[in-house]
Image (cartoon, rainbow, N blue to C red; front, side, top):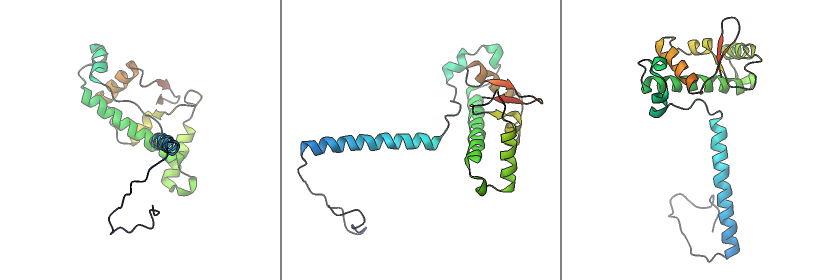
Length: 168
């Protein structure tokens, strides 16, 4: 068969039935399996961190009523999506080379680096300030969502010093 670059876009594709020896067929199946695995690995690397998984209806039902109050599943999952967005943006910014950062982004990266502590070392984390700067309101939905996610062991809260709380 001609290489892909040799085929013109205006001519229809031509397929030919060519007998393939069994050894070559097995080798091609292995190669296809390796390509599929490589694609999965690349997709996982592109995704980067996993983030916080959304809460299911059953999980929300397992949270005591006095803990969750009147919060709905949509509000909790809306907060989870917003939290994940801020988390991914923070670590996308931290992963960029310094030469590609604007001065405002450089200041944010320096703030992020200064906020590291022994408690947060080795974890993806956010501070309250990170969430506030992203426009997430610190209201009852925020507080209740944090409490629900802590109950479900999706988040861990630490006292960060200087009145900062970190979420791991």
